Amino acid sequence: MSRGLGRVQRAVLAYVRSEPGGRSTIDGTPLAASITGLARVVYGVEQPTDAQRAAVRRAVRRLEAGGHVEVQRRPVGRTYTQQRAHPRFWPPRYDRRLAVCTGKDGCPGCTAGDRPSMYFDADIMAMFIEHYGTLAEADRQLWRATAHGWHLYPVPLPRPADDYRTCEVEITELCVRRALTDKERAEAEQRAQQFIRPYVAAMLAMLRRR
Ligand SMILES: [Zn+2]
Image (cartoon, rainbow, N blue to C red; front, side, top):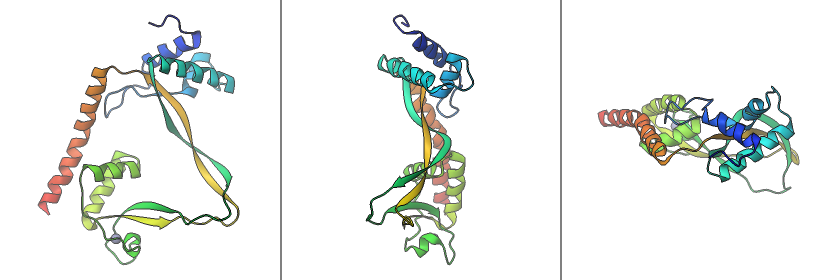
């Protein structure tokens, strides 16, 4: 099955098949390895060169085309600052902010004219998880929100002081894991559902008690 693959491709495939990152505690699937991590292993160096990373990236793309691996672009938890030009005239831009209602005078959501919502279901929970980044923090915020509700309200983004703005750009990297079988995929889906079920059930039970 690995015949016809180049040296770098074989090394990458062997490494990702060893599931070096272990498995997700949520759905049980292998965690993905980053291109930099793969290049370290394939070339046995601490700081891979750009050429080494590029060779690994090419090998990964070929393995992906052959159905051997799955590839995703993921944030790696680092950012860099970039200055970007922007058009001289630009329309006001808005961001949507999710916030727990404080129930007090001066609650930013209430001040923005948004009525707090007491609506909770699996979709709302998914929105909290996406917004707060982790299940633990989303859960904490959801419980806080049961007191006075939550807001989703538009906030105008600040206009830059001059013709340039400084952005924090999140660094992403290609991340790779071995291809899953259809059976593994179905099992992962089931495990993820089971994982989230108690949280949704707890929310619904609490709402019924109110
Ligand atoms: Zn409020």
